[in-house]
Image (cartoon, rainbow, N blue to C red; front, side):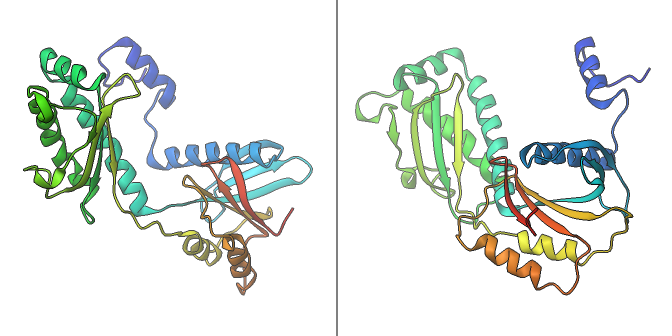
Length: 273
């Protein structure tokens, strides 16, 4: 029996369930993710699929038995926005560290902050352009120190809900452009981070890479592009992609799909079924 580095029996049982009694390799993890995405896609279309099998290059990622069609191979690829994803990861990490730092405060300090705000704090901050998400944690200690210090004051200087003039705060003025404090709408402390991120659509770039790659399969091949961020709002986004696909000299795929995992919707299918 495979043992896992867990501190409790419950953790070991969970690890065995998740990892199938063994550690998954990176390729196995990727294959599992592709199958999970495809199942969401098939349920949305809807597409009746009797079986899904992961395959190795040069075949497309998945070989499926589609009801009424038989074997169909699907190449699965994600459309990402690297800048936005870095910001989202930075936001998540900063929020975790803020929560840990606040919960580590002495109980009397937390009680004073709650008394000032009417609840545990929710802090919303905007970072100066160009501040890497990996440096967002630099603001956490100064923010916590500010909450504690102002909860000890009285009069106009006492901590209260509202905007905070960060430009005059040592330790924050160099990295923040704005800051607001209020009572959290959740049970725990909250830190919300914003940054001006240029969101560029990379669908065409991913599409170009896939259309110019070489695949081999005895089954008809289709391309499934999926995205975990909303589809661009530009009204001509679909038309531009369709025109781009039609102007490619050759394509290994009989059909291209773009699946919006964010809204569980098929954003594009060409040619139409």
